[in-house]
Length: 70
Image 1 (cartoon, rainbow, N blue to C red):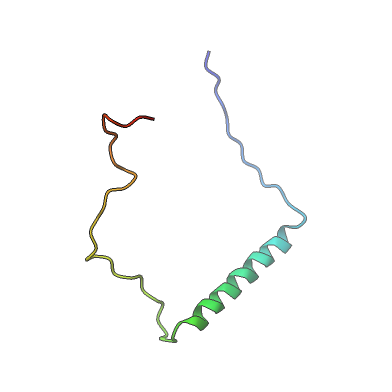
Image 2: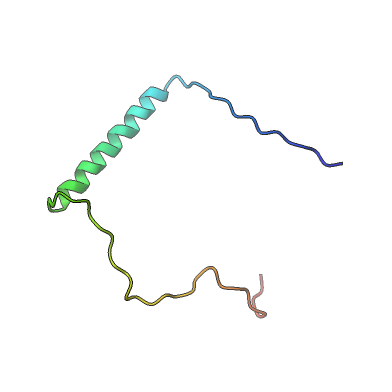
């Protein structure tokens, strides 16, 4: 006989939730300020590096071969 499970979610108030939220916000604010101070001020957000000329290499998504022993 297969048991049917029900998932229930509830909100639990923590007494230190506000303090932890404030700490996380201050951390992100400080980190953002450090990042902007280390880069020249262009007024625009920085772009990602272009990788289109790099070769594509297979990695963890390779199909298993007959010789693999797990």
